[in-house]
Amino acid sequence: MTDAEFGQLKDRIDTIADEWLKCLGLQWWKLSFHYHRDSVSYHESCPEDISLKSQAYTSVSWAYLDATIHFNLPLCIDSSDVGLEEMVIHECMHILVHEMRSVTNCECEQFDIRHEERVCTTLQRAFAWTKEHFLHMAHTNETPTLPEEIDPDAGEPHDISCAVSDGTGSFDAPTTAGDSTS
Image (tube, rainbow, N blue to C red):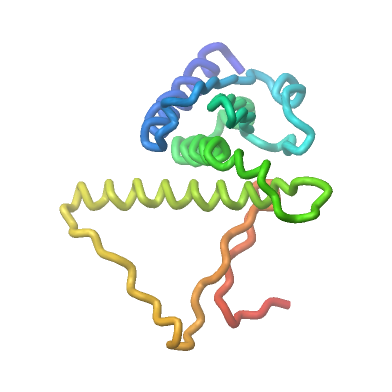
């Protein structure tokens, strides 16, 4: 990665992060960004439960409102602005939900990060959709519409699942209640 590529990618990420840190109310946190120029330094900094294929990970000290997002720039360089935005929002969601790791009611021997990943991905998609929805409304002067009310007694199937990441960036497609897979 050349110095120019590094600078341009860092600037793209910083611009996106500046917008979302304000929107998400994270400006009172002490946040740091670490831009790893090569995958070797990124992997050396990763905790054991982080995939070597990840574009970023976040370390959080929630009690002190302190977090660091680490970016694996070689894996980010070909990302679109939308892809970078999704990644930044997702990592910000880890900042917001990390505290929940210390609260567990199960007798599990080890924390399963997949639960937090799904929550962060779902929240990221909700925030991104909300932004796009309201930008669209602002440009078209449309009146906001609410989703149709779901009648629980109607007996019709409704989408009841979420896309779940297996940690590799692939997602299971949602299914509708009553659908069966073999």
